Structure formats: C-alpha cells, structure tokens
Length: 570
Image (cartoon, rainbow, N blue to C red; front, side, top):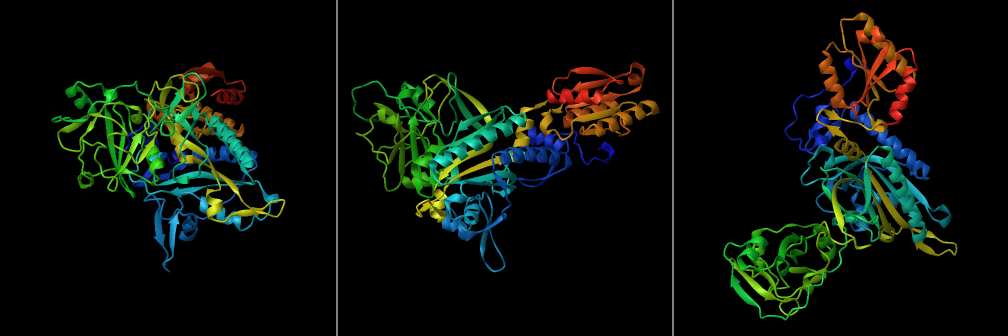
C-alpha cells in the first residue's frame, strides 16, 4: 500500500467530543469517522484491525468446535414475547414496525433468535452438544453514548451460544469458551483479567465472567485479591457481613441538623463516628421508589439493588417522587416510611449496627440512636454495598486491591432460562423430553480494538500490538529529491511485500517530520528509514515504535527475515 493511495485522513487537532485516548486517536489517525451520535464509519485502517481481530476469534472458536452462522439483525417481537423479554429489556431496545404493522427490534443480542433456530431442528440427544456463533452488528439505544467505540449504539459483536444435554455438558462448554477467550485476548496482545461478573439483562442464574482489559480509562472497576486468584467486577463482588460491637440500645431521638445534607456534614455537626451513621440513596424503578441504606462510609451497589428488588433498571429518584413518599433529599431515613409507598432495602451490615444516626425525612432533622428491628423494618435485607479497597477477599480474607478495566468479552451460564420459556427441548436416551441447557458468550470486536489503543498509546499516538496492527512496516523515503535513495526505498518496499510482510511506503512529497509524525500517530510497529545515508552506509535504520529502539540492518542481509523476527518479539 502507498500512502498516496491510502484513505486515512489524519487530523492535527483533537476533536472536541473525544474524551479518552482511543476516541481521540482513532479519529485523529483517520481510522474512523462519526456518522451520528453513537455510530461510526470504520475507514480502511480500522477495518484492517477489525478483520485481524475477527480472524483470531474465528480461529479460536473453530478450534473449540464452534460453527459460524449468520442470523437476521431484525428480529420479530413474537420470539422476544415468548421469552418474556419484549417488555422487560428496557429502553435500550430499538423497536420498529414494518408496513403491515408487525413489530420487530434491531437485535441487541440473539438468545431468542438462536433458540428459535435450534429448537426447530434439534430433536435428539445425539445432536448435542452444539455451539453456534456469528460476528455481526448489534444495536442498543444507549441513553448516553460516549467514549467513541466504548459505549456506542451500533457495534460489532461476536456472539456464541452453546446447547448441551445437562449441566455437566454446560460446564465443559463454558470452560472451553473461557479458555478460547483467554487465547483470543492473549493473541491480540492485551493485558487482561477474567473477573466474576453479574449476568445483567442477558439473564441466567449461573456463573458469569467478564474479560477486562486493564486501563486507567476503563469505565468498570474491578477488585482482585492480593494473595489468591480471586477477581470480580466491583458490582458483582460479594461481601461478608460486618458485625458491630455490642452496645446497649439508647432511646431514639430527633435532633436538629441545619444544612447537613451529607454524611460528612452530619457526623461533623453531631461529633458522631461515621461508622454509626447510615447513608441513603434513592432510586426510581418500574416498581416505584426504592430507598437504599448502607453504613455511612460505604457506597450503594446499583446492580445489587436491581437484583435484590427484581427490577430491570433504576435511575436516581426525582425530588417530586421523594416528596410524594414523605421524605426529602439529604435527610432520608427508614424510620416511619410507609412500606406501601416505598421499597426499603437495607444492607446486611446495617442490620448489625446499633444506635445509628440517619435522616428523619424532614429538612434540617436527623434521628440518633436508631436501632434496626426496633425502629424500622426493611422490605429487603441484602448485600447491597460496593466492595472497597482493603476489604477482605471473600475467598481467603486477604485485603483486596482495585483497578479499572474495559470489558471486552463476557461468558454466561444461561442454564434453561430460554429453553424452558421457548420450549427448546430434546429427547434423551429414554425418549423423555428435556430442556436444552444453554450458555452464551460475547466479544465486543470494536471495543477490543479501542481497548488495545487505550492500553497502548503515548503522547505521539497509537502503539499497536503486532498481531492486530493495520500494517506491520512503514518504509519512509526521507529525501524526495534524491532519486537513488527513493529507488532503493521502492526496491525495499517491493522486497518486503514479496516476503509476505504487510508494508506501506510513504511516497508523499512531504517533509520527513510530517511523515514521522503520521507514522507515530498511526502506530506502525516498525519504521524503516531510507535516505542518501542508507546508500552510503549500506544499512537500514529501523525504529521500533513500542520501545523507540533504533536498529541498523545491513542492506546485503536478509533484512526481510530480520524484520519478521522483530515483529514476532513485539
């Protein structure tokens, strides 16, 4: 490929809407362009990266016996109604009607569709196990698309679905996919960690693991043990109940707390310890107002609240809703709340506390010496707090650490969630009908590309892992007026092409500085500089983008093989 023929329109300025490195660099380096909010066109350089990631995925999926198919993007409402998710999936589902008034959705995922396909053809246990996958666009109407490919409305996903006879078979399929994912992300050159995760809208009551690329810009927070191999998404991490020391119960008392709307303000004003206070967070949901309470120095875990109450999604409650329930922001508490008007969810550790300070549901007032059981009765008691750094590992008790990550893949055990609802059954050896036991496994292809950039960049641009770089080598003729060195650059370019290297020659009539700047921005793993000096010394100057190291290769040697060896080590 010649740069004069390449469609890679670079930008010198950082686009104003781009907040994180991958979004900025993929736009600046001419890899993609915004089409509309949350949707992007992949330009040739990005598409080469996408195709390389897809090729690695296909190889590893095929190695595990999975078979590739392609299902429709537009799915009929009937199959989602059969599974029970048409009304439950939420506002992220993009719904539409055809000219006849029939309802459809643009597939956010394909559990219903693949279950429908398989149930119509698979009859016997002899046809199982079965693992089918596709690589295709998905559509989710994100409330707030942002961060480029990290949270977009139209994205490429590899989704796979396993069908087994029983849970033992599912366990094997799940492990095979877990191992395949480990190989895929390793081959993509990513630093990642599998973590225990919540199953979310996909459902299923079994195990789920997210594959997190470690990066400071990651939206997700993970915790991992400093001593054992435990790791989990912070939303999934399970916590032991904290038991407070015994205390004699004191009479509950209402006290004035003017302008004290935060835990810090209240505790400072009353000179009370924060571990004797109760923090309140209010959500609104399809089931109504949810008031959540954790210890004052803890944080509420939104996902655990959703799972505890059994709602599809929550958002912060509006002041009007709080007022209707008889409370006010900054002074919320469980005492005296009407269970017919509000759902009260209390963290299990709060139920072990004594003589608590909490809001009195009245502007400027708090209660002190509140005791669970005596003074209030919750609707739900559950582990609803976020794990904090230093909390004990649920497996071994050692303190946990925190890191940020980008979710690039997730594996789920669905069990019979869809097969029972949609009557996907098979006949066992005794001729008895049994539900198929399912798993599902997803990889965000565009997200994987963006995560690779987040993990591999510097002030000058991207630093691609060699396995997924759009091209491996850039040949740079530095003196456009020197015919001899330009001819040598062309010869080297042709030699590297014939040797099977993915090579680009920057044949533009530009200054060397411009060419070097674009080379670093795009992130070619190796840059070969050719100029008059090359002919004088008989050596090629090769710069390694990742390390900045410069190596000299004799022109008379098999420099193509030497460059291949250098790429293998990157």
